[in-house]
Length: 256
Image 1 (cartoon, rainbow, N blue to C red):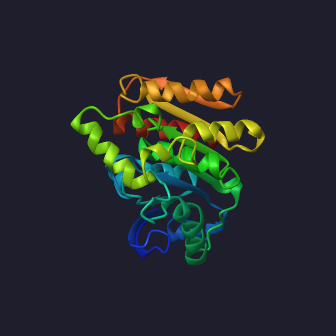
Image 2: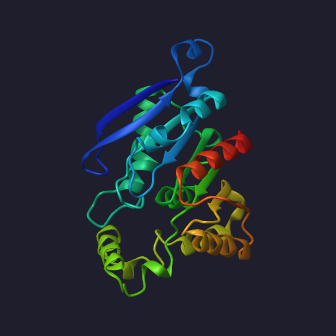
């Protein structure tokens, strides 16, 4: 496979962004057009960047085995939101980036070719894209998803919670604006319940020793109560790359 890093200027975000891609080698493209490949948007967590999946997993091997183009964007600590400061990461991922890559590489972003997955903050982001843009993806996978719940909107107590609360103020324009907004997972679920047949194929997994286990269980239970079709897996492991790499592999084997 060929590995690319592109540093490009984003209109939506207003800064230069690094973008990592995995594309097939030239010999493969002699037999199969690039526009025929499935495309995986692979999202990083809160403390990572576009390079993380390449550095810590066997994603290149998975891309080769499954004839995948893998797109790994950088989104800082944005929770993949159109932030209150004007940096529009959600718009970047759903509008600007597909348009840019289709022009640059002639990629085909038809829904039947599109997958999205991510870990932690990226797991939240993967489901945000899947629920809010269901016509864009045919399948989505959240690994140890950092789903925003009341824990992020209650009055912060510790210094760590106060730091996070301040950061979330900058992202969402105030924590009081989060509940009921498009960044609230409860809103995604309620909207999806009105037209569940239009959703992508949904999968989530979380480790039994993960600090986000209760949050993931809560999301799954809320989705199930609304009658949404969502596969949920719990297995040995924590908030760690060994778990995420293995369960990304399992998911790709299922959907491809």
